[in-house]
Length: 259
Image (cartoon, rainbow, N blue to C red; front, top):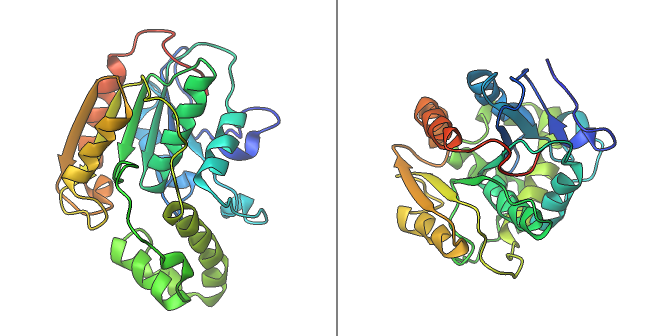
C-alpha cells in the first residue's frame, strides 16, 4: 500500500505499509540521487511496529516534472511543511548521506517550532564542521557518472539507457550541487539524541569525521561503525534495522512531533 500522506503536501511523503496505532514514526530521508523507494525494504521490515514514512524529493520518479531543489535548506523546509501535527506520536529522523544533511536542517526547524525529533539517525556523512572543497556538480557528465558509480549508489546498468540517463543526470547534478555547496544554518546546538552510523571503509567519511556530529547536539550521542563503504547499510541492513529498533524502543509515548 502506498499512501500519499498529508493533505496539501502529499507529494513529499510516502507510506508503503500500515502500522499499529500510536506506533513511533520513522521519517526516512534519501541520499543524493535517491528516492523514497530506497526505503521500501526498511518499511517492510519495521512495520507494523514502526510507522515508516519516506520522503520523495522533487525531480524524481512521480515528481519528475518538478524542478529539483537548489539547497539542503530548501529540501528541509519542504519536508517540514509536509509534516502532520495531528497527534503526538514520537518522530525519529533517519537520513543517509545527503539525507543526513536534510535531516539535520529539518531537526533545526522542528526544534525551533517546539517539536524536537525524538532521535536523529545520521548515516554516511561527516559532521557539518568538516568542510571540503568539492565540485563534482561542476564537472561534465562523465565525471559525475564516474563518481556515482564509485560510490555504488546507482547501478551502472542504468547509465546504459540513454533515455533514462537524460532523466537521471539533472537530478544527480542538482543533488550534488545542494550537498557540495551546503553550509549549515547557524543556531544553538540541538537537544535531540544523535545516533550516527557509518561504514568503516566509506571513501566519503572517516569514522573520526562521523564522530564530529557530537559537536552539534547537547543530547545523548552514539556512534556505530559497520563493515562496508558508502552504502554499507544495504549489506548491513539487518544490523542497521536492529539499531533502529533498539533505539525506538527507548522512546516513550508522545515524545516528539508527528509526521
